[in-house]
View 1 (tube, rainbow, N blue to C red):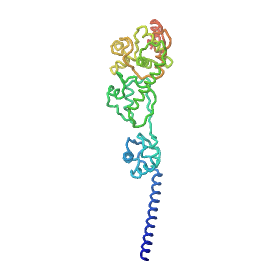
View 2 (view 1 turned 30 degrees about the vertical axis):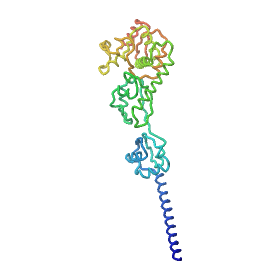
View 3 (view 1 turned 90 degrees about the vertical axis):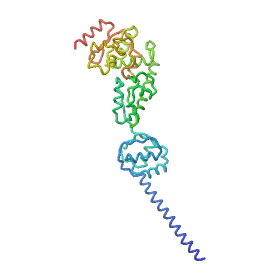
View 4 (view 1 turned 60 degrees about the horizontal axis):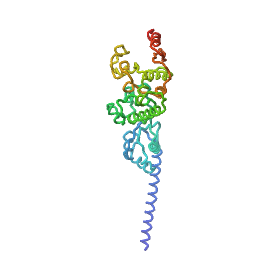
Length: 338
């Protein structure tokens, strides 16, 4: 009996010691885990990308890019805090040392880094695409696509991408696809064009929103002074109404493309292309540049004028004339005197 009591006593002491040992180990682990979660990591990189996938895949990506130095405790912390299902893909920037807990907060909040990309009014599509391809912070999914392939990828039915993207400043995630930016710029242009067309003046003779976009691109390229846009649009509207050719140099230059050698010459004005508004009547087949709000508004609310001609004065502004004699006089005064 005494032996049994002695054995129970020894077992109790062992069990008690094991219990306290477990408690001590749990306490040590809890302290270590708290310190791990709270201690800033010595990050190797400042910019990193997280692709879609489960928490294990994300942890592997972070380890490979030098954002974390071990995956197991990071995975455990993600699951303990419930963040493992909230991690968002994107491009991120670390501006100061973050603890694993802070890193998880950043990833679960989708606190991605962004870049600013600006499209300029008057840019041609080739200018836009060159700027896209040279931006090192974008993923260039469209770089090897032809224009037709790109339009098909974006779901756009058009002969050319020219003029279909709204010039503005866009903020997009670093590392995101250039197709995403293109889609946003096209959607914005379509929204702007639809709204402007719905609010057009009743006397506008243009038949479709696309015609308005084409004419707006001519106004955009012809305008040196913003205040002249409605008058230039009025001149073009008058010419279209009476059947005169538009005779706008920027369209001719666009049609000549890379074959244009310096300034326009007389032979260039006589060389027929679909964009030569000296040899062909009506509008060119497509826009010749990207247009902003002001050009769209000008062609859909043109000035009420009898002018049929305009010539640049050399200071950015234009002088407008009602007939050919007045125009020739203005040409002699502002062009031939140079």
